[in-house]
Image (cartoon, rainbow, N blue to C red; front, side, top):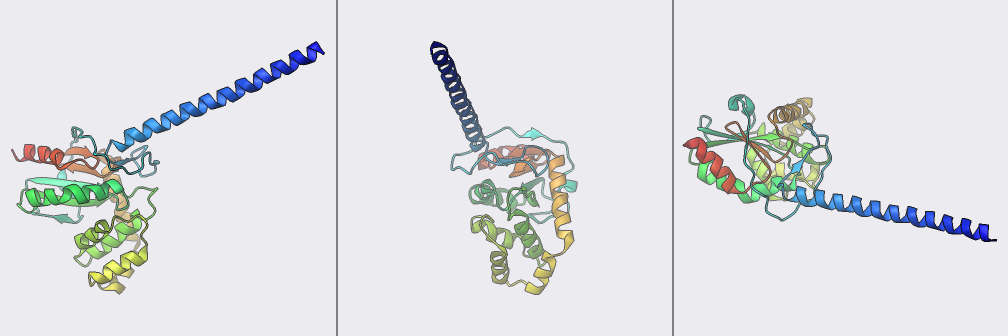
Length: 251
């Protein structure tokens, strides 16, 4: 009888040890995930696990202001990096800003809503900067590529930035569908038959893949990412960060 009691006691201790270990492990995992969430919220953008659009998102969108980061030095030819993508401003402006963006990225929406208008009024419309938009749709955003193709096809009819603005003024591509894109195309009075034919053109996907490769090659690993006269800025940074870099280039 005593041996049986001793055996039962030891088994009970083992069960308590296993249960305690599971609880401890769960607390550690929860703590790490919480830390990653806080870090990603304050980086101001969605990022990838590698230099290709196949990584997993680490953060949910947040209203917290991103922390300014010093731009990284990148050696690149801005004329080559601009490619033949749509742009605003003078073609030969002294400063070139290339944005690599994702229409479904909430941080890209934030940049559009809070910062782009200031860049346009202070630098693009005054002839000091050219603003180029290139696509960098992340693989975990289901509508990002479709929205990019819809906008690019609007660009075939000289309405690229009008369509670009439609998407961002409506909160980005998250939760949207082809029906939304078609309605916006009609509002912009596009030739719908021509626009829809463009949507199925394989060249559109190839163009987007080229944008992704070019962005990755200069250090872009998340959205939004910017190259300003060869300098990299990551995330939806406040206007003051862009202003500092642009003014340094102008001076």
